Length: 398
Image 1: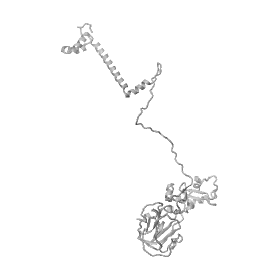
Image 2: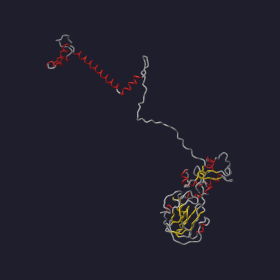
Image 3: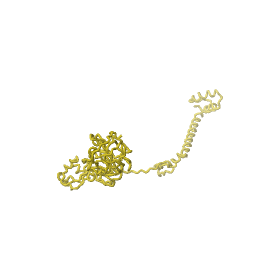
Image 4: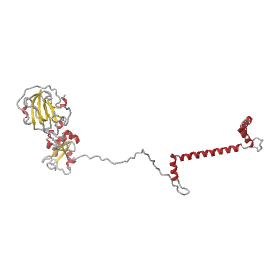
């Protein structure tokens, strides 16, 4: 580029070509100013200076923006942490990391964790006792201890005699740890014979913890080292029920029940015949104790009733038993309906009919009670057929 003002620069063709149209226009002050700078050779210097000024202004703007950010509430905390963080002296000192501080919140939930191991309950292996409460039945007691009703009965065979009607409030029962039966060891018994009777193996008896027997010292199975009178739990064992049912009592020969109790009738009777359509003997149609369960030696249903509530004849017929029963039924009435059918009403508080009396469906024959072997007021009701035996009343009541 020439140093002379009137000589165009050799390497500035671009600037000249852009300036010439503006010079020709002559109407712009900036264009004239720029042309003058070009002519003086100052155009590149001015361009460099402008670039430097622009960069400086940009840096100043960035610094101002960052300053405002760190001065704000959200950024100030971090800035304060950085400013307050200790710095290790020395040329190679590293910047210490500020401690983390959890921000407080009014909505935070303070939880206290309590961890512990839940230990499962060990299964019971020993025999315990239970005192019968008013309103209890073998079914409710069995449910309480998660056993079968027959297990409660078989576990107390030496006090109940396998008769579920022999329980009463305040009586103590033995509760086996598992379903099965109880056996009292007698002198001269052998393990093989006892196990076979209950349907188990000798090892089932020896190895059960509650029996406290040892296979190494049991000795000969035919004459084992078991003291007479020892009570043994027979897990899974099944007993046999004696027939505690009252005999068939008919209008033709009611005297067959003379050994049952003083309520037995004598002679023979004629009278009205039943329809064999049986209705509920009390107002309530639900149970309070036992259901029909031959496996538990219970061949009737225990219907809920209030003490003194009227009990009605389920069908037409003739009374063939009226009074006390010695086999656990307490005050009892039996009606013969003819055609081989009888109905039985037990644990009554009062008996309102007499031997040989004709009754009709719905007539009052007594009141609800808890006499005999009973733990609370209810009506024990049975239906019997010469052809079908003791039937389930649920299948016939309407």
